[in-house]
Length: 263
Ligand code: NAD
Image 1 (tube, helix red, strand yellow):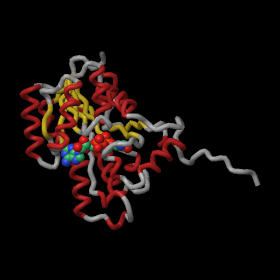
Image 2 (cartoon, helix red, strand yellow; image 1 turned 90 degrees about the horizontal axis):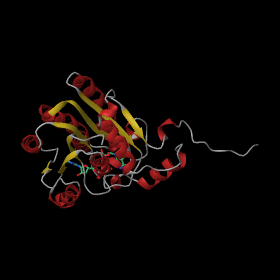
Image 3 (cartoon, protein in one colour; image 1 turned 90 degrees about the vertical axis):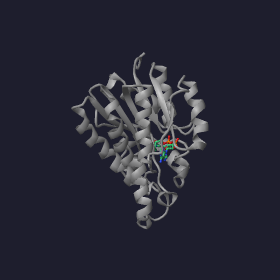
Image 4 (cartoon, helix red, strand yellow; image 1 turned 30 degrees about the vertical axis):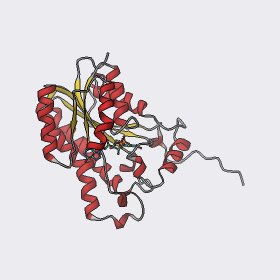
């Protein structure tokens, strides 16, 4: 039981397809006690039964990260119900649909601000608010995608947000290392989830990743979950500021291995 005695909060479960759900399963299987948050009332109905699966029916809280008061209220509730915590999972992203297809230069400031606020600044704000609860051997994990490092068709605004999120991970890691807090990101390969449904031509991304990754397959939320559990547990006690790819190796490819006819 690699996470026995560890307590933490997972932000970003929307349903049982969510990457955060895969991470919850892997952590619970190793003995972790997990609190969950939900974005709004319609997702509350989905998250509550999921929390019950893990024996966490009393540990489900609202938290829309665009509302600073809800993050403050989350800290108060967690302090009361769990006391000290050992991990935080930030598995949250949002960009208005107009930022996820079409010509990049048409992105509006309004869409840009929303994407950066919810997908990037929220990691800083959640960290700042929950820091007083974190033990001096704790771990924070966020989720990113290769579109934050290299151009991916249609990923557009979210690519810029993920680039900012990856650097936020590194700056937070340096800042919080002295407090015994590690901060890492998993860069997951494409997975069919609610959030992914917003990205233009997502099916093509899945097909391309499967065809051109060394392992010739797409990744599952269970595979991301297992790697997430490693980064949240003491197995990774000397790992921080890392962008850990869980993408069937896709990111190492400079060129697809295609055979051309001679001549
Ligand atoms: P998902 O839709 O299951 O999860 C996204 C979560 O963000 C949802 O739970 C949603 O409620 C939450 N959210 C959105 N706005 C919020 C707000 N204002 N306050 C609080 N929560 C809010 O989809 P997912 O694919 O599991 O996404 C989780 C993370 O993984 C995201 O950061 C996403 O960018 C990242 N990611 C996804 C993929 C993929 O292909 N699915 C690949 C790499 C990284």
